[in-house]
Image (cartoon, rainbow, N blue to C red; front, side, top):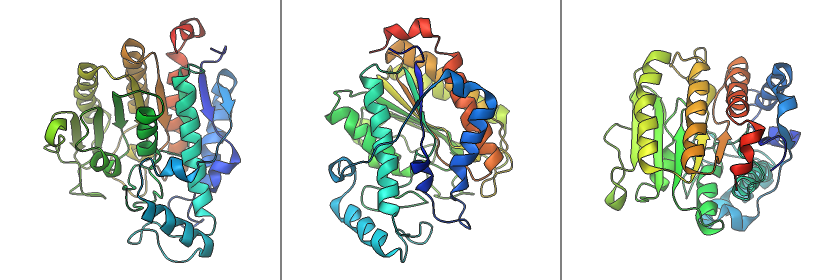
Length: 326
């Protein structure tokens, strides 16, 4: 275990995952985070790691071959859309999306190997992509791929996925709706007001997985008080299942001022959730917590929320405690 047990995986290559200057998911998001990280001072307390490229066989851990080939074809021409209209094609989008996936898989493998105790990837957490299609600015679902890699390559079965993005993580939820070993907790703006319109309170998993999923929809304009009250239930739910590995999708679009959502939270919710997840990971999962940036379309909010996650990872991971990971 290195002296710096928290790693941030970030290189300019990640900034290439975007859909143009005029699109909400634009190229400036990466720079906003990196600027905030540097100005906060926490960059000197983490290990800075690079990116990696996913192979087709990595992507096929979660996605159907027809989807992979469709993205490849559209990436060559840069024409059309990868879904029903939210996710435009552009030249090189396959390679950019494969970099997101590969970087998340690298961070996942490093945590399992005990190289680090916590990790954060800023341009990642593409939670809307389904097994057979892109959706909602998400080309490949790096989260779903990482979960499948944990099971089939690393022997980690009981994985918890926590999503605090304002949008429901439907690609992950429905991709594992029947999977009893994927513990799912999602706090999001009520689908009656916001894309993708899913994530009702009564969606708790199906078949053997019934009761392993917790959706906590929040009313429009809900703030820190409402969020943290719901999160108390979410944290208790996670402890009940004692996860071996935790993935956090830390979307910044639940903060007040996001241009396409309606929640009114502050980065205090990111701090509290990260703090609690570090404790749960230490108790049950050898400390393994992987944070992914997710959504967020206000650049100042992106910097504030994601840097808050990294700062809490560092604060909750003293170097002296890192030797227990592995």
